[in-house]
Length: 329
Ligand SMILES: Cc1cc2nc3c(=O)[nH]c(=O)nc-3n(C[C@H](O)[C@H](O)[C@H](O)COP(=O)(O)O)c2cc1C
Image (cartoon, rainbow, N blue to C red; front, side, top):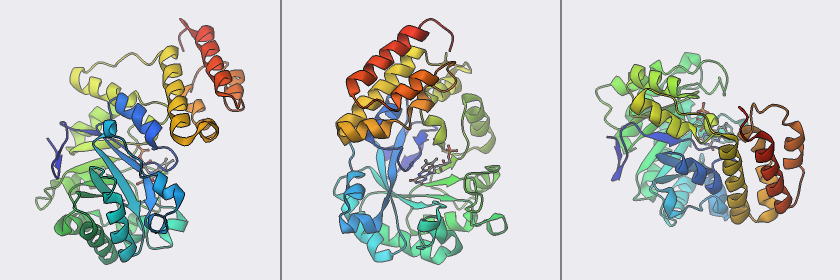
C-alpha cells in the first residue's frame, strides 16, 4: 500500500486532481463522499500567498473531513516558494504539492508550472526551497516533458526523489500538448519500473471510465491514479471505479435523484463557503455537467444558470425530479 510520509493510503488509491476554479472545498466534499482517497486544492500562487492576496488565502481553506488533503503551490522564485511553504504549513494540510505541470502561458513565462521542464536544475532548486520551508511531506505533479522531442520525466523523477520528494504524479502529456492528443502512460510505466525509483508514482490523464481505469491499472503497474475532468459533475466516478476493481461489475449509473442531490449539495455547500451570491453564480458552470445527456433539458438548464434566488433554484431542482423520476435518463 502506498505511503506518503506517514500518510497511509489504501491499495491503488484514486486521487482527485487539483483543478483551478473546480477543486474547491464544496467540490472536494462531494468527491470525498463518493470515494476519492486523496485530494488536492486548486493551485495557489506562491507570490499571491506572500502578498496575502485574498483569493490565494481563501484557497488554503481545508476541513478535517477531507483528509488526507494536499495544498498545491506554484511559482518560479525560490525564496517565494520557501516562504509560501511556511504559510501553507500553518493551516496543516497533510502534504504540500508543487505544480510543475501547468501549461498556461502566464504561469510558464514566470518559470513556474511546466516552464521548469526546460530547466530541471531550477525545478530541483525550487523543490529544495519548498522542502526547506516545511516539515510536511512534499509531492510533485508534473508532465512528461516540454515537448515530444524533450521528454525528460525519467531524469526529473530521479532528481526529485533524490532531493526528498515523497510522491510523484505524472500527467502523461507534454507541455506542448496542453490538454490535447494522446496521453501516453508508457512513459510513466518506465519511471515506475526504474529500479532507482522507490517513491509512489501516480498516473494521470484521460481516465474516464471504470473499464479504462482497470485496463490502465493492470497495464502500467503504477501505485494509483489521479482523476480530473471525469469527476467534474460526476463525482460517482471514484466509487464506480472502486466497485469495478473489486467485483468486475459496473455500478448502476446515478439516478436523476442522485444527480439532483449532488447538484443541490454542491450549491448549498458553495453558498455556505463562498457566500450566497458568489456561490450561486459560480455554481452555474457546473449544472451542465451534472445533467449531461438528459433529454430536453434546455429549459431547466436555462433556469439553473439564470435564477438568482436559492429557493427558486431548489424549486427547479424539485421540478427536475418530478419531470424525470422513473424515466431512464
Ligand atoms: C479546469 C482545470 C483546471 C486545472 N487546474 C490545475 C491545477 O490547478 N493544478 C494542476 O496541477 N493541474 C491542473 N489541471 C490539470 C489536471 O490536474 C489534470 O492533470 C488534467 O486535467 C489531466 O487529467 P484528466 O484527464 O483526468 O482531467 C487542471 C485541469 C483542468 C481541466
